[in-house]
Image (cartoon, rainbow, N blue to C red; front, side):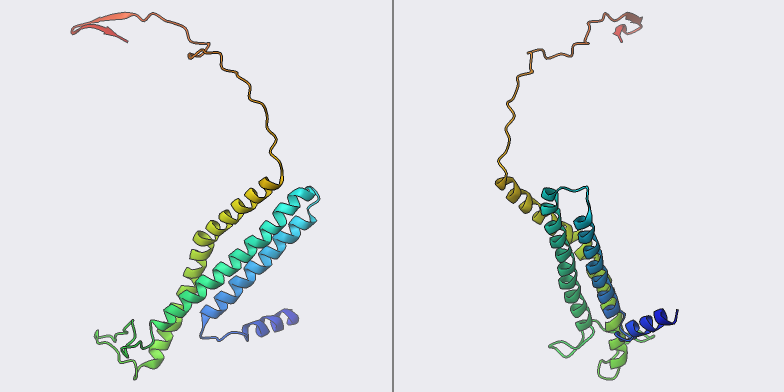
Length: 196
């Protein structure tokens, strides 16, 4: 256990204890890298897949992993930077988000820098989570499907399409064969004849 504790302490030392956003970002990206590598190795070692299947699936999995990681990194870093800047002074000298005290009075940035920094770090952490959701649940599937469609078209062009001659199975009959004409009873009612 001493080795694992040392490894954990070393890993935690890479990150600022007051900045959960960087920890979330790095561990999520590392998770994507490991998951993609595991999927790719699984495809390479799978003996049930033919060479033709592997030629298609392995590059697709590598591209899928690259899209996941790239999209996550791009979207999340932009959101994290934007979230942190919201609590820093802009061109007008005031932050976009104003903090207030208990009475509702807006806190001056220059005298309350620490509080604005804490708020910026909290927003950055939320942006790291939001970036992961947007990139992995919305954007990555769109990119993955577009790439898969491109690869499918590319592989279809390489292989000539086998044409199966069409057979005319249509006999001209428009009703099912089990249809039979029935006569329905007529019931008398006060308002006249009623057919059911």
